[in-house]
Length: 418
Length: 107
Image (cartoon, rainbow over all chains, first blue to last red; front, side):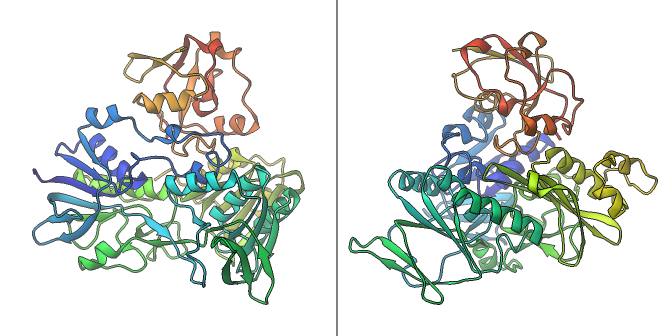
């Protein structure tokens, strides 16, 4: 087989590397390897529209079959890379097949972090990462009445919201002191805690899970909490974060630290091997320490680092400098986050949590560094520009609903998009 | 099935017979119509599936909700009177012949 661009992983990052490399002029063969049966699909709706019956699996397709023909991208599904021989520039698949490469991109993603308690592998315990996972939860929700969700992060809460909307009794168990504690300030945690409680979701924060217990039929029937409280249930959904799939890179001798370590162009120390997506850790100019590599689990980070990697392959490296952004839909509220905050940042509220429409601005040294917007998409889109432009803003101005945020972009200190 | 006409960036037109119930964004993606990115997968979060709806059809569409309205303020290309997010336009029989123009850029 002709050596060309070989991409391991066919989700967002893998797709984007293939697409952007072509768009930027790479003319060689491109092969995209995926280990799932489904062609590349949108994952965000798995815990949102798909569980609510608003979206169908077919509607999640990222690109139609005709696209791959038109762009001369070979998509191979249900294949798994077993090893990389960097000296010989080739990889070996699970079936023993050997593929040569000119460029190799690792877009191997992440997997659900397993719950390390007795009973975690009982039937009726679900994770949510893939389309198959989501379809299994959807099927479960047709008959289950009472579900325990372990983990009060985005996946857990979006799933809880969807299941509650479908009429199930839902309890959320979060080991940390508050919901979404790793990613949002207390004001946002409080807002979503209230929303879930109002919708009838039972929340248990600051308590760990000791064990899952089986019923007479062998399926999970109860969650035992630290302290002894036992919650009866028909099913359990576990959403306690992810682990980067970096074993292939590790085995190939590439530097890894809970993710493949790369620069802002997605480059590993091997000039022919790059990485992007959930498996990659890269330095971000918008992080607290621009030199510190971060692993950002988001569509935006996957797409932008993938485009940077593609720019290397096309011969015109352009590092990823984009402002990170995320979003989550829960209980009919849309949370959008721009930038990366730190616990010490000054927090300024604009709008009213009681009315369900507000933004929380985080300032560091007088600059807007992060904005959490609830049901304020226009402010979110503007926030990305404010952060990118590194504008100075006063807390009083940001809090004033009559102050037009757009004018901040016109001030002398604002730097244009890089 | 209603016919949807997509006016593309290169000036050409793609006409697709679209299944009822699908969004104009989904139909574009499934038929390899280029220029509609839809980075968020139809969650009404990213404003990268922006299209210009032909004036003749604007009145036949339900008005944008608050979320879409706000996101339209932040689209990458110029916002015009016909600007809509194609993930929010669900195809029904009344939309037969709908023409949407793909903007110059989505990001």
